[in-house]
Amino acid sequence: MVRLPALASAFIALAIALGNLSAQDPSNTTNSGTYNNPNDCGGSDMGDWGHSIYGCCHQMPLEGPVCDPCCCGLWYFSGFGGGTFVENFHRQIRIPPVATTLETQGPSVLDGYGIGTAIGCRVHSQLRFEGEYTYRYNGVGDWFTGVETSGVLTSLTRDPAEGNLLSHSLMFNSLMDVSKPRVGCANLYGGGGIGIVHVESTIQIPATTYDVSDSTFAWQLIGGVNYAVSAQMDLFVEYRYLGADALNVIDTATGIPFGDFDYDTHSVFLGARIYK
Image: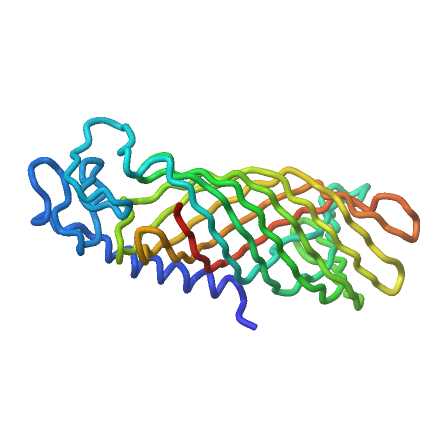
């Protein structure tokens, strides 16, 4: 299976290549700052309203950071899916009496998948807000226990494990386009979000079973490249990093909390966005 870091590298290369399509040709602008050629991709000038994809085909030079009435208040629905790689799902504790000894325990998580949907609104020609739900699923390989002393790994044991790791996240995102979207043009965008993630897992090892069903605060960073197929539809590919911590894992053999686990994921998604 292709690892997600390799997919992320490929995504970055694709984003750079497509982003080069957005270089503006100065010969296509007028003194008013409007964009004259609807077939050219580019122009992040706040004045080039001319050929935005949302029916703003009349020349409307902009003065000041206000909304073009054609481009604001546009609602959209998006769906996406792709691969998810869990970087961290473990706990770390200091082992007394040596403060430099650190024990790390957790499952080795396999590559998985994620699917999601979002509803949002473009509040400015280059700014949009959205509410997003994403489901992520990963399998479990084994259970590891590693001990480090002064930063040097002194022991590592692995036990066979069975189980899965899944999460549901609800996020509020703010996203900014590098330039105004145009039909037939690629456009880079980036942003981030905050919200809540609920993680569920049951992991069986020979000695016990670990359960988690807990919710915690989550945050994410988003970067992508968008391609406007038409005035009503975009296709996009994007990378997302989701981070969360303080997930309570229970050791069912003792019935007491085993520790707080971190949950950090990398995802590469492909999707489509439909504007109303």
